[in-house]
Length: 91
Image (tube, helix red, strand yellow):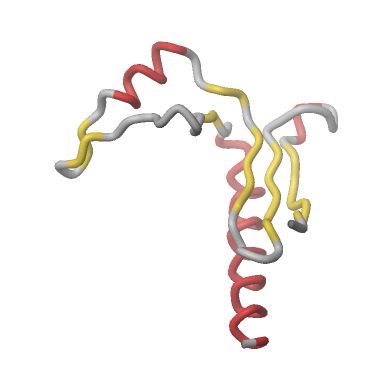
C-alpha cells in the first residue's frame, strides 16, 4: 500500500489531524480525524436516511473533518480521480 499525502489541517501546527491521503493502488481516500463525541455518534448510529437504517459497525469510526479542510478534501478527490484514471490507462 502506498499513500500519497494530500494535506493536513493548517491549524494543527503540522502534527496530529485531520490529515488526508490517497491510496495509490485503489484511489481510496484515507482520512485521519478526531473521533466524534458519543452524542453525535449515537445520533449518526440511529439515523434513518433515504429509507435505510445507518449504523456504525465495530470496525468503523465516524470522524469529524472541519470545514476548513474542504480544500484538502477537494485536492484528495482530484488526486484520487487521477490515480483511478492512471490505473484504467495501464489495464
